[in-house]
Image: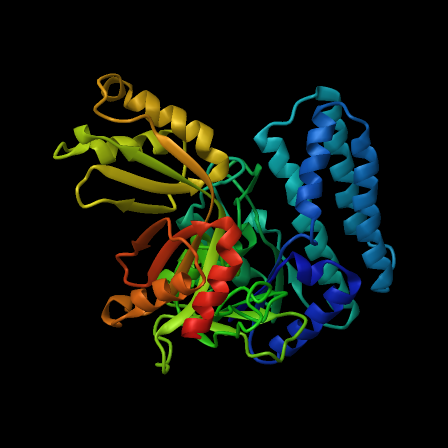
Length: 454
């Protein structure tokens, strides 16, 4: 068994769907296949906007909904499909749900999940029927019948035991060479539609790979695998043919948006390899992500960057030798559900600096200043200092601590370009060295480091 996941760009038009189906037809010659697909590109954001307009009694939602429906109907017509009754039924259901939201002037997370689910239901219905039109038998499975979650709408948590059991039963009850399944959507024990949050389609594919004991998970998008750097910024960037799970997760965490770490965790824990392939250049080798990639001449894999970073600095003599300050700082951020991207601390324990997303700075400052209000009033700790306009540049590779001079070469490359380093951190996994620079220097920094190492 193999799992093929197609992203929104791969099913965004009739031409793209035709290309995806060519890939699927070749795949089923090799092995039984489960295809997971996202909504057509941009559809989910449009559905969210439609839901919000409906809740605000803005009749503009009707025009936006008509545009979305027309886009799908155009794809169906260009594919040469006649009246597609299942598609018409889904469109009618979606219209009725939005009309209900409009009348009630209320959009709960539960209802929004239902509205968003139609993106994947529509795209996979078209995909399945076009394959049948081409003479390729397949079984369409509603993922809400097999992926079971809790009641946390918007970002539901999967019940792995029930999901595993239901997937196995479905595959046994409906034996086929090819299955088509919507990504991103699921249901709870009451049969109510839920969604899996960011990267949900990848997560669906990952879960299916584990439950079906697949030999490989292929993620098809519009890029030819992972690159040594973002080719839009570094023209000399080249594909990475092999990379370890840990290295891929490090690159993705700091900006290489090819895979989203939480969504592929199931296959990582079960040692199922992941292939990153390009729908529009299927003959390109792509990238194979695996536990133990082949040895290469260099243990350095690539560079990634992440912008819109803010630095929060806490200083004060009252922190020296007093336990618990770090826990209170992190607790204050956790209470606001603010993710810490990078941490660095002076050995004197007089200062501590953390990096977070810029959009969370106001909440972070209030939470931390409130937490340390007593120490601030005694002038043992300074009010939190917030600085914005930064980017994190990360050099990722295997066992960097054992590679003499790596940090020095990296900092020297930046120094030659006159780029100031604001903060430095090295992961305990020994897989990355990260530096914080001004966002205005991000492109130059990436090119300088790439030139020095690649």
